[in-house]
Length: 192
Image (cartoon, rainbow, N blue to C red; front, side, top):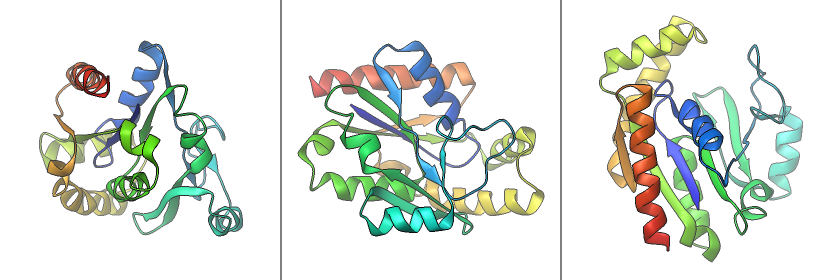
């Protein structure tokens, strides 16, 4: 299964993905690529594949990306084909991407039977914009201007939540994780 977790910045997607990998045997995280610089504590190859603009361009020209997009109008993020297609036949994968990326993966799935048959999407929706603003401020990664930009993007992203296989209405971290596990079980039964 390729389980994609999407939703606005600050809803806890990375936390959910990391916990799923830690607690559910057989899941591995897809490490995506980005042109943004590493944040404090992030490691290349563990958190992201940190690429220069030139490296990203070269891989893009070589057709190595399954999906990619500009995020928050600043940096590019993308998923390497090899990170998914080379591994999906023998393991379950979880990844955290934005709604643009989900649209692109769905489009790619139309041409890849394995991807199409194993793709499951989950959208994590915040309780409210005020709760989302508080989460973004609490994590301390962004200035006020960036938080405002992320909240504007979140409004657009929320408009797409009903196109996902499952929607988690975010509560506590524990509630969100329990909901993710329940949806994973449902999807696993459907996929047989």
